[in-house]
Amino acid sequence: MTDVTGAPADVLHTLFHSDQGGHEQVVLCQDRASGLKAVIAIHSTALGPALGGTRFYPYRNEAEAVADALNLARGMSYKNAMAGLDHGGGKAVIIGDPERIKTEELLLAYGRFVASLGGRYVTACDVGTYVADMDVVARECRWTTGRSPENGGAGDSSVLTAFGVYQGMRASAQHLWGDPSLRGRRVGIAGVGKVGHHLVEHLLAEGAEVFVTDVREEAVRRVTERHPNVLAVADTDALIRIDGLDIYAPCALGGALNDDSVPVLTARVVCGAANNQLAHPGVEKDIADRGILYAPDYVVNAGGVIQVADELHGFDFDRSKAKAAQIYDTTLAIFARAKADGIPPAAAADRIAEQRMYDAAALRGW
Image 1: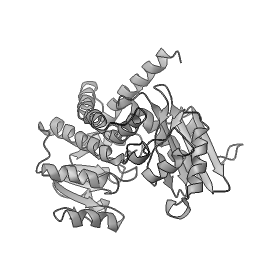
Image 2 (image 1 turned 90 degrees about the vertical axis):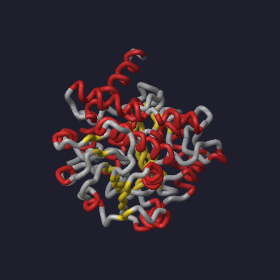
Image 3 (image 1 turned 30 degrees about the horizontal axis):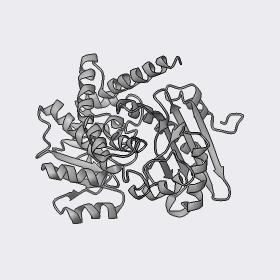
């Protein structure tokens, strides 16, 4: 079923009518010369210009791409609010296999579309895009972060993303076991790409026992060759069933916590870098009912956006790292709010973020 515009009706319903919608603006971008097809979604600018990365991914169809952009943009509003940033939430997706169609011309065309928004949306890296890509985009758009240090940027934001997740794990350990130390804890990481392999380093440095898996064999091999004591597992299904697993860290694509995975999770804590880990509303209650502590993804993975936001003001790594370290206290505050209100941590985080956005909008007279 389609609307009069030709777009699938469920996508338009999400945009205009559902609780998952409420977006301010969605831009469909096409440049025939370069082959660019992209979606830029701005969920909220109540706290300031929308900030979020650019995902380059081979979606099955355009409707799937639009839906992903809407979900990711909404998540960025909550992430930026909880990180204490003066930014709203936005996200962009470029449709296609980056290994096949990514070119300089395509990235420049994308940069022109972002620039046409006049600063309402600030872009950065995400799945399928890298620092070198942002350097190209920045040639057409000054509202670009995640650039290389040689071009005035902060470089790889996955460094502080992993650091923030690590802080979330420490806070989870403190809340559940009364000690933030991860020494001796068994941690399973699904996805050891840009963020996951940095997270491995933090965990090993503290003396944790680490298990990893990834759909890409070379990613696993890179970790195990450098750290022979890290144990590789066949797949995520095997990882989440490991006996005695203390912490499960989803660090790949979203939807990791679903009706199939939650019932068989052996971990006491879920804390990872992936966006949109909850496959659908209600999963957070299923997790809580099983006695599993969930550290909301958009809270603990905010280190990267903290880094790129700092870049807009003249990047200082120590300043960014100090702000990312506050994820520890923010996570503890969410657990305390959840306990006080008798709700899952995901709902508690939403309430705190929504209140900040509401207060900001009220000050603007919206």
